[in-house]
Length: 417
Image (cartoon, rainbow, N blue to C red; front, side, top):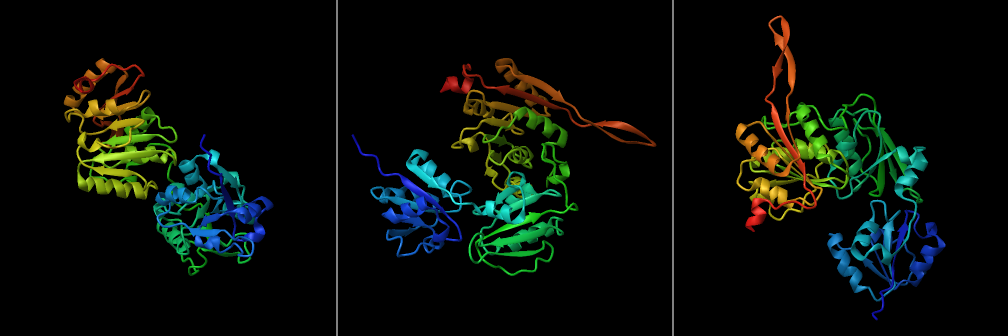
């Protein structure tokens, strides 16, 4: 019977270093054969207390984790983490790599807990946005008048970058407080408005508290953003049809969408805006439109949208299996619907929209074969008619939606294979 490797102890450490550690954390570090962490964290350990080999994480970190842990598997290994290891920390990566059963986690108060204590903000009512390893545009999703945010900084330049972004988006009156070295002897706060942020870069270990005023732009949090929120050449699922389509796609946290024939990217973008754990891939054959989709995603706070440039169904090869598929263009491409249906797991949803008779006939065939729901969405807008008002009808949209059952008859493509 093979012997299990010793557990890995994960110790959260703050800016207060060794004096701030509890008895269990100190004992684990004294008994360690190897301590792995960032250079700043390792420097917080006194040599007279911790005699273990000190190992700095390489960059990039995540790909190196399995090999580094395997190299020290025969020793008592301690991994240092900033604050709470399971809050935007190394703990998640370790749990995904070796499994939570191999970890012994000793958390320290997070920087967010310290910040809320200093500010008097209730933690459960404060949104946290991490910009560590994430684009600055990620912050856009959290912006709305009157909101309070805690922003985890990537480095000393982050506060000025956040201030410039806020001022450029119309939130110049927002109050920023930069909290440096929280919990440590060098703790300090810097205060100022976003517009004309007055402070030079300070300590790289910082967190930004943002209080947004009432004068900034509003961005609704439900599907159906105004059409003007998107840069577009006309290839855009319009607002009311988009809201109905997202309702039919029914996103839940953590799911992956394929958005085929992305156009302006609106369906994938609003799928991602529904929850921060959602994922989406949009496939667009036109390179100009693909670049526009990426710009729209960044502008609306979801730069994590993956954009694949190429024609479907060929461009779908190798993509991770979706939980839902939306087809907004290219329905008549040979094999497209077959490929999408085959990629779905039981319970996966497929929604397709069209305005052409040819594609409508194809959707009718699929409706007869697989059931689901076939409907027509019609929207009319009131417009001036001389001195009066009348209705102008937009092109009606035919929509087919279906859920793939567990025992599903094979499609023609699957039969052929």
